[in-house]
Amino acid sequence: MRKPVWHSEKKGSAKEAFVAFSAGRDVVPLPEADQDLVPYDIWTNQAHALTLYRGGVFSREEARSILAALIKLKEDWLEGCWHLDPTLEDVHINIEAYITEHCGEALGGRLHSGRSRNDQVANDMKLYARDVILEFCQETTTLISAILTHAASHLQAVMPGYTHHRKATITTWAHWCASYTQGLRRDAQRWMDLYHRINTCPLGAAASYGTTWPLDREYTAQLMAFDGPQENTLDAVMSRGEAETEITQALALLMKRLACVSQDLILFSTEEFGYLSLPPAFTTGSSIMPQKRNPDFAEAIKGKAQAVQGYCAALTTINAANLAGYNKDVQWTKYQFMDAVREARHAARILADVFQGLHVHTDRMTQAARTGFLNAVDIADFLAQSRQVPFRQTYRILSDAVGLSTEGFIAKSTLNTLLQKDNITLLTDEEYSQLTDPVRCVMNRTHCGSPHPEQVNHALHSLSTQQAALLAWIEAQQNRIAEAKQRCTGVELMDRAAQPE
Image: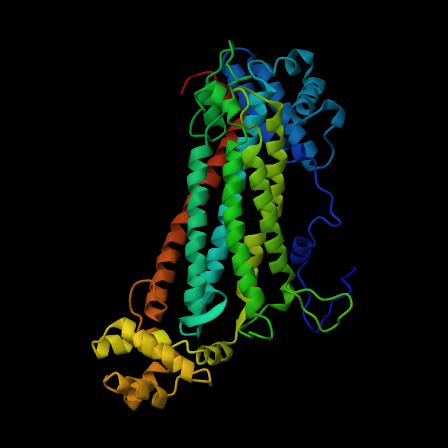
């Protein structure tokens, strides 16, 4: 098996999936957009055939024949025996041609009764979008779980907190990681909200204005695990691209967060910081410098995040200010959306694997937390509270003390000299010792959401509980979809289709 030029057994071998993620589309061609829609269009056809059977358009044997052909088509497609023919324009006409070839014109030509490609593709995209939501919700929860486990092992790993890219005050690595998980939880909640909002069925809207064919749209929606039909037929077609835009916006927010996490990992793993060591399996080498190990996964995530932002901008403007009804412009929402999905896919899962192998240099973090006057605000707070003087006064004293100090920390003698000038009780040796201990500084912050180990542990436990509920929700939706797919292929459904439920 061929390997990258930078491969080294001693430095650890990079995972194949990670290499592909970082390489992007350099040597991998993009599939046709409608290739991804084949299984969804098959499902749409199955549901429509059963709905037409229910309405008396097809006989039992005719519907049976169409369903059998669709099952065979899916098998052929999965085995690579059937491919989209570009001369037939799109996936919809390709599948109609297949049905016609296998069932005859009398059936293939009637399968399109009561629908248009307008509502057909809108329905396919809803089915695709729904799976995308569940996929990214699953990836998000996987990352949350990995970070929660990692954070729980570093509750007392003190480190500098930063503002404006400068050392600011003292925190812990677990508190830092907990901030990631709290944000990711909002991302997961956003996926759930989106799922419920988009889970309506456009099929039956036809070109935009309904049809004279006897369609039970409630039944059609049930066959595809939708919550119900997208009621107004004009809106069902006109809103195509809206769900895609919302999902891409959610992807943009998720990728922005992952880019932030990635940048933290890049900086904290540099020799200059030395807080973290990245797992070798997720770093790459240089084609010229043998000593290099690069955080390509993190830089790739940052690049992909920017790309998704671009797709998001494009989606918000496509089909804008057009007359209501179908317009060809909207077709391009398919490409932008699928490209955004392709770029964002696996980013969260890659980061989950990274956190599982991430090594934290707690001694280096603690050392960094002891310099840079990071305890200045803790001292100012302590003096304001214990000496009962205004905080602004102690703030000024600490500011002067920092200005008079040159070693990266405030000497007790310097501070007491300034306190004496303001007639404030001097610090004792014990007080000074506690205020210069980074761990003690963290332990004094006992309020909700603080870096105190007990508070962080409480937050991690709460998030873990929410994780269980979220995973149960994902499984419930996946089971519902799987059952609906099975119903559409089962012969026993034929008898039930003839009777209203």
